Image 1 (tube, each protein chain N blue to C red):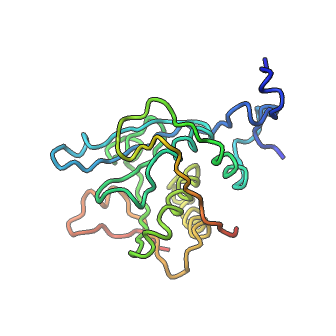
Image 2: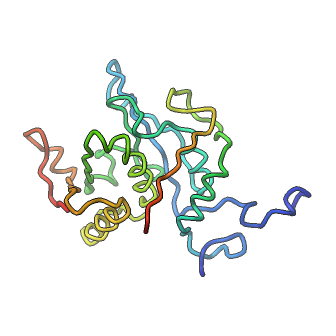
Length: 54
Length: 168
């Protein structure tokens, strides 16, 4: 499979759904430098996607 | 060079996964005392999967935005307005949701649409493919319509809404 990885830097930058959702659950640190707005939260929101059968 | 801590992690987890392009998330604030353009704020930009999720995990979901507020996701360097040179020949897809769907489906739709962004090129040949993919991805019923409005039509509209050039 020709997907990008640290060991395959020339691979395609396409990732499957399961892998993307796995990465979502790991991003609990708030990005720096965001503007001060009421829509921006300090704590991670757990916005889980409903399962869609593909 | 790996740190002692990093040795147990696979290389996949040490380096962020790049996207094909850099994207910007914009927020429209709908403050009536300000001009339209002043209400438009570029929140941040990202070019890796990890940075996208870190952002997504820390912003309000689309269904809970106040009335008149919007998110927009555009390629970095392109403003979310039709005046931008790179949007002039474009258009917009419109999906109308009923009240019930606002709480049940809107957030999932927004996220699925965002994830399809890399193929949102509205060249004629792409349109058929895109709307088909979109309906499939959103699990939409065949009866639910997605319309496409060209910016050129919307700008020169006389009535309340521009004519849909395409509908699926």
